[in-house]
Length: 486
Ligand code: ADP
Image (cartoon, rainbow, N blue to C red):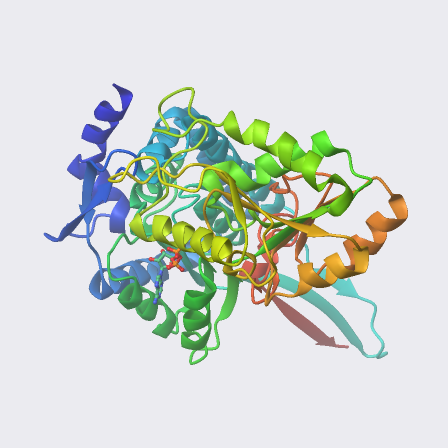
């Protein structure tokens, strides 16, 4: 079995020593990584904290001048080798994702390829980090700008995309000339360690990329935030933790990117192509069993098509198969932990109490396991918790609407603004609604919006900054102005 074989290799001391903090002495404390589909222990990884984070920062400091002093072309070449290492090892990397996070292997492979795409993209961007010559408004002065690496970067990442959420941060940081220290989610440290190993094989110098697995996220986070040498912090995770990190970064006035929670509306107008809308919803809602921050969270369906839409959706949802992600037939893996299952149960119970009906699903598959049946709720009311909070699970709550203005107001009635989706074939309505929705990303007649070439990020309490795209590297650069007196 590839999983057993990989598990043995993942426990090999060389991998854990080399990748964790670049040859620092391996601490005796470890913690277990659990497969959420089976409950079995996959590996024991070093449990690092403040001391090791400080070692990693010192090493990053030693490597900073060398790394940012390379030509952009030299860095670009190492990034392309990093990309190639990921592709060479894509099956192993995807196996690790499925083992530690649970998503179906096919999806895990998609994530690894998506993750690799950031290295190719930012290898190409690295060599185009242009400054400017500014036409001077003053006769005896001349002005230019340079873009320079901001310094050492701290990256704190979540478990739902254990591979791609890391590459989306480290590829632009490395391309810009910044060493990076990654603190992966405690549930999924193996993908991070394996990526660091790919980086080593690609020729990254010592100290340029370190991974700090550890159970005490608060301590590692505070160490990164408190240290003045970390000039940029990039975080993906909950709004609650984002707020803490934003506050903690204030003392050293760090530049900060936050990719936080969402509460995405998915609106289907009566002029939409229903089959397209159903496919879009299936992609947006049930990918990773509903555990993505851009998942459709509230589905507004026009009254005229509500019943027909529900029937069509029911057919598709009934065809989903829940189970271990290594089973080829499976489309829905487990939820990440018991707390995730309880949140889903709470959202369903609350909606039902307020009048919603469970059309399918609504329960966990097996008492002792983390599998939850893909669920559709109909007759959901606007006061239900499921419309206010991010569920992070496989529930599609369907809400009726009649009027465009009303539905846009309902969609915007949230402190979050990450993704939004709508389906319509009326070109004037498409422009109106696109402009009116308060979200950083809007899917128009599509449920799949992510690409390395497009800016990813939210507005309102969903975050700060953009990842990927031509804007992604600016997050790791400073602009320096040169003023020449003649
Ligand atoms: P989720 O609820 O999806 O697990 P979190 O925001 O709790 O989202 O976690 C995202 C990342 O933030 C993880 O790597 C986690 O370990 C880390 N984290 C959690 N709490 C803190 C904290 N106080 N300071 C720094 N990082 C934290």
